[in-house]
Length: 68
Image 1 (cartoon, rainbow, N blue to C red):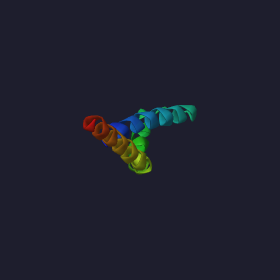
Image 2 (cartoon, rainbow, N blue to C red):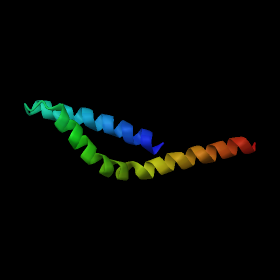
Image 3 (tube, rainbow, N blue to C red):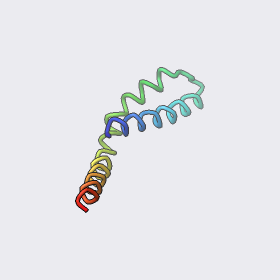
Image 4 (tube, rainbow, N blue to C red):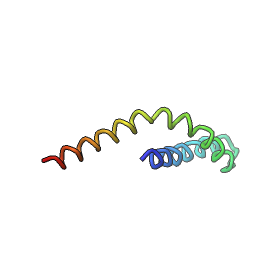
């Protein structure tokens, strides 16, 4: 689940960075990819509590559904 969330954040951040870079007249996609990769560990650390929250909610939901 965290891999999917990390990949989703990477794609969103890559789109945002490429938009910013093309605005500054340096249309280099490799620079945007490099910056997105460098920002990815920090972004995963920011969203990790939400990953744990949603994973535990889904686990408890399935436990409650299985018990009844």
